[in-house]
Image 1 (cartoon, rainbow, N blue to C red):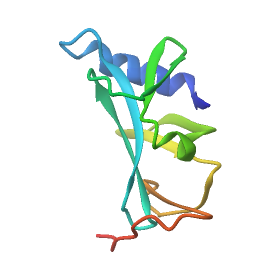
Image 2: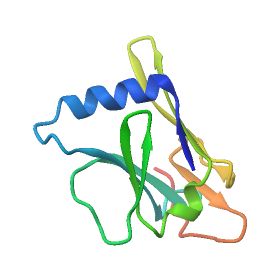
Image 3: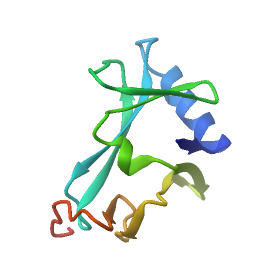
Length: 118
């Protein structure tokens, strides 16, 4: 369902290790909005929701809410360092267009809720 590169796995494990709560996991989701109609949500969480879908990826518990699964199937997450900065990148094979910031995307059969970019 979702693929995470080795560099992203290492970075996520570092982030989880820095948390005080030992049961943290990676939560991924999709929300209406963003410049292209849908935006990604990605963060650490320790609260499980009804209907959440779980996947163990290279030792990381990844959780996706049931409404977001259809948008994220085949998603690829990477982490790239560039000089003094770095960040996660997302490649979504389901998206037909993405915003220049990489945080927003458009689907073929769903418009979402496009917003003005800042």
